[in-house]
Every structure is written in structure tokens, then in C-alpha cells.
Length: 291
Length: 170
Image 1 (tube, rainbow over the protein chains, first blue to last red):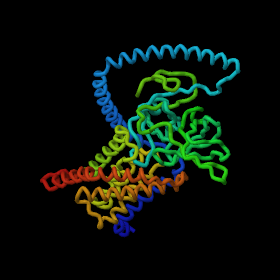
Image 2: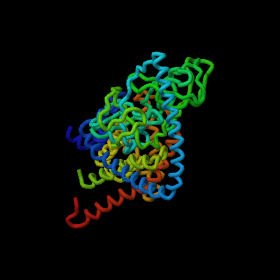
Image 3: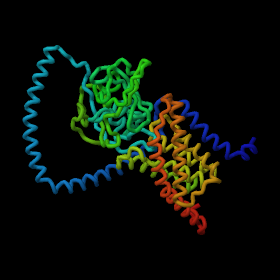
Image 4: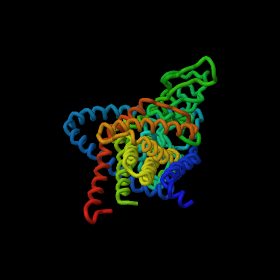
């Protein structure tokens, strides 16, 4: 046996190197990934380097842009003063409208069943290393209260969910990933469907939308709510809507509301509890500290 | 583990960082080079079987870690790519930059197709081929290949010099 092993050492070694990862992938293909100690150690080394490079480059770009901006600052200042006056007027009108809205809501006895979400601002430090991956790496992890499966959003709409975690970093699986599926409703018709990723970098697929629904080109799709994403977040627009003469469902693509290649920061939805600890912003777009 | 293997892993780790950071900094959506695949190609064409396969697996593991796909897909694909390119190695010449670019272009296309097939088949997410991103990625990898090959050749040359010199590194 020893001589056979010695003679076929190379093929045996290579076959083992092929077989072991394949079996492990096969066993875990439909499950998420839980990082082991080695995984965490490697990410512990690599992720800070990614963060330093990203912050350094953006820092240089910001400094250069700030220098360039000084040239037009006087004209911009005058324009901003005028805009500010207009904004003050609009703010007063908005305050009036809000009070009116509150009165009407009380009159209608409308209660928002959805508790407010706690949002954590996270800086993106890198994207998935493989061109086939659809992930972002953010500089927030379990130490900040992020949990696996936590929804991640941007002011423009839905980004994805947290798929793997270390203490200080998390990888976000984008809605473009073939593993992603989000319950959705059409904003105009309130018809339900599911937005699935296909691996395409610019489009998702709309599934389980009934053919009888009045879905049209350009209709906005928002999250349907439930245990995952908060309700009413913009997912994208329906395009290429095809209603065949047969079948239960129509076919359509979805152009995501978020341009994932131009994101610098995202918001992680921690939970729906009302408490707001330090460094955690409440409500979409609320100010907060970066990582 | 030899010093040379350690340095190859360091280069791979550095390339993994670049591969994650550059698309984010330059807002690249499609033309993303697969730098770690180029390392696997170099190993398949230059290294001995046992060390090359092991280093390819380690390189694939690095790719796996930052892809958040089901674990070990890219580890398996890296070793598979190593075996295929190694087997075809007699017919492949990568002495010049253009040759390495052509090999990288073809290998990226094959790698992407197999990755899409395996991913779609085993995760149950279905098959979705998109030709444009696949070609752009292959194009980006082809452009990067001569540079990565040059870095690794330089690394190997420095170890050869060290071996030839009395009292070298190894």
C-alpha cells in the first residue's frame, strides 16, 4: 500500500484536493456560511488592509475635491443662502402639513403596526473578491450588534442581507445574488410578488406575479414587510413586463433602485426596537457616525 | 512550506485585497479582473504538481472567503482550473505578455461558465448566463494577466538567484 501511495502520490493528493472542497460545497450548498476560526483569522488580517486602502484613497479624493471646491465657494454661498430661504418656507409648510396629517390619522384611528427600525450606518470597505460574487464588505460586525440575515438598505432602497460576519466586519449579499429572494408589492396596484436575484449585475427577476395583475412597465416595487425587510422600502422598477396568453404568472425584470457600484455607506437594520443606543441612528437617512 | 510558497501566498493575499478594493474605488460593475485566477494559471504552468495544487487550493480559499457564496466553491474551482490548465500545459505557452493574456481570457471564460453551472445546479438557484459581464470580466483578467505573471516571475527569479548564491534562502 505504501509503495502504491508513493507511486501515485501526486494524483492522490490532487484528487483529494478536488474531492474534499467539492464534498464540503455539496453538503453546504443550500446553507449559509458560518465562519470558522481560520476564516475569521484571515478576514481579521485582510479586511483592515481593505479598509485602510479604501479610506486612504477616498481621503485623498475628498481633500482634492475640497481644494477644488474652494474656487467656487462664494457663488455657491450666495446660491445656498437663496436655497436656504426657500427651504425655510418649505419647512414651515411641511410642518403645517405634518400637523394636519397627524390630526387626520388620529381621526381615522390609524395605527402604524410596524415598530420603528434601528439603523446602523456602515462604511463599505470592499466588494466580493470574485467577479462572480455579489457581495459588499462593511466595517461593522457582531461587536456593533449586527446579526446574520440583518437587512441592509440605502437611502435609494434595498441593498441585501448580511450573509457572513466577524467581530468588526460583515459581508452583505446583494439582492442581485441568485441566492436572494425578497417578497415585494407593487406600489401602484398593491399586487404581491417576489424579486429574485439572477447573478446579473444590473437586473433581478420578478417571480410569482399573477398574470391577472395590472403590472406595467416602470411600476415601482417595494418590500412587502414581514420578518425580513421593513415594509415599503423601494426595491426597483419593473421592466420587460411580458404577459403570455397562458400560465398563472407574468414575466418581468426588475431594475434595482440602488446602483450598487456607487455605494459608499449603507444602513444595517438591527431590529425593530425603539431604543437608540450611542452611535446608532434611527430612521432612514438619519445622521450618525461612520465606522 | 517553503519560503517561496509563503511569498506566493502573500502575493495572492495582496491580489485578493486589490481585487476587493479596486472595483469599489473605481465603481467597476462588469470589467472586474479575476486576479486570483491568474495566480492559479501561473502555478499550473510553472509549479510542480503537489505544491501548485496546494497553493491553488489556498488561493481559491481566499476567493471563497470574500465571496460569501456557499463555502468551498472557489477552492474546488481553483484546483479544477489548476488540473485542467496543467493537463493542457504542453500546448500553452506564456512566455510573452500577449500569450498570458490570451490564456487568461480563455481560462476566465471557462472558469466563469463552470462556476455558473455548478452554482446554479447545486444551490437550486437555476442557470442564468449573462454573456456581457462574463466577457468583460475575461477582458479585465486578460489585461491584468501580464502584470501578475511579471510579478510572480520576478518572485521566482529572486528565489532562483538566492538558490544559486552560496548560502541562499532555501
